[in-house]
Length: 79
Image (cartoon, rainbow, N blue to C red; front, side, top):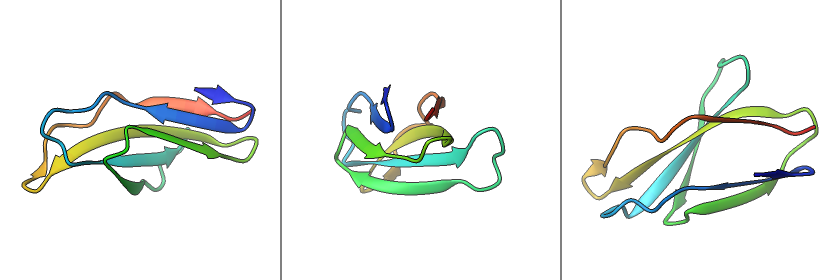
């Protein structure tokens, strides 16, 4: 969800997950993919600069490693 320059990203809790990694990349160019381990959070908000466009996806994990494939990839733009 985008409100002004604030983006809120949320996802459904995965049974057995102990944490989540948020992956992001500039849109439309996918030059570099960054990641942020957000621990057990299932909602994340932040303020971004006007003109920012990003792809985002989430992957869950536990002590054994990744649990599943990536979530759906979403795209947002701050206008």
